[in-house]
Figure 1 (cartoon, protein in one colour):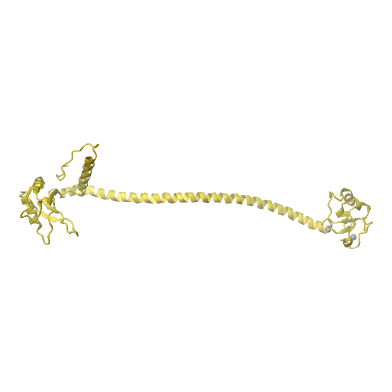
Figure 2: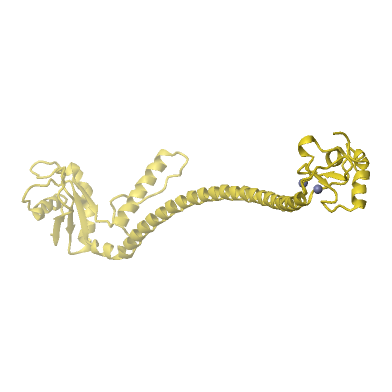
Amino acid sequence: MSQINKPATRSRTNSLTHPTENSDKCGSCNKSVLDNDKGVQCEICQLWFHSKCQKIPDCLYNTLIECNTPTDHIVHWYCDRCNGVAKTLVTNLSQLSIRQDKLESEFQSASKDIVTIKNDIEENRATTSLINTSSIQSQNDIKGLTSDIVSMNDKIKYIISEPDEIEKRKSSIIIKGIPETPDEDIPRKVKQVLDVIKVEDNPKFSRRLGEPREDKRSRPIRVIFEKEASKFEVLTKAKTLRDTPSDDLTFNPAVTFIAPDLTKLQREREYNKRVDRRRNRDDPRRRPIIQDRPGTPNQD
Ligand SMILES: [Zn+2]
Ligand SMILES: [Zn+2]
């Protein structure tokens, strides 16, 4: 089979050339589309049709012939069936394209969100670690503060009770270095010390301080006099102990010390004074400070 009718020879190959052997039947009426018939090929299904079977007006048929060349498809034609499919296809495609655009923009904004979330997480992580660090710091600060408050509380208790404590010790002394023996007669031992330093007043009361020691070292003895003057007399004469020979004595005068009965705060003050004195002695840049003689009564 060669060319179809004259207009077809001028038309584009796909739509208006002669049908091939297998597809020369009209897609509508199933009769052959002959050379001298006005025949049109569908661009989609590739079937041939009589133009009258597809109700193509002559003016449109002529336009198809005139406008299309074998290489240039200006006017497209689809059979009724393909046109319907094509319409749906085009609609769907355009919807698909809209949806794709929408998805793309959603994806882009999701990507941005992910980046933002990532940054937020990083920031949170940094903040969390900062909070953890400062929380640990705060906990330590609070611990330190608590222990400061506890020790301050203790100090305040001492300070408040200090006048009473001083009053209680007003006429008492402490004797250290008297050997401790089972079932000892403490007043007798004290009397012996007082005899050595030539103090005649008898104490009102005397006893060992604290619980017995595991290392068997002798505990100090607190001696309480009736009169405050007796305390001063003992403290003044205490230094004569050193020169006393130990013959016939139950104690060794060389290692026996008589000291004022100080409160905890007074002892602390004495200790600090000793530390200062030592520091001044060791540091030649410091000027010597005149201090109370250790062991003298507190004259505040
Ligand atoms: Zn037909
Ligand atoms: Zn078709």
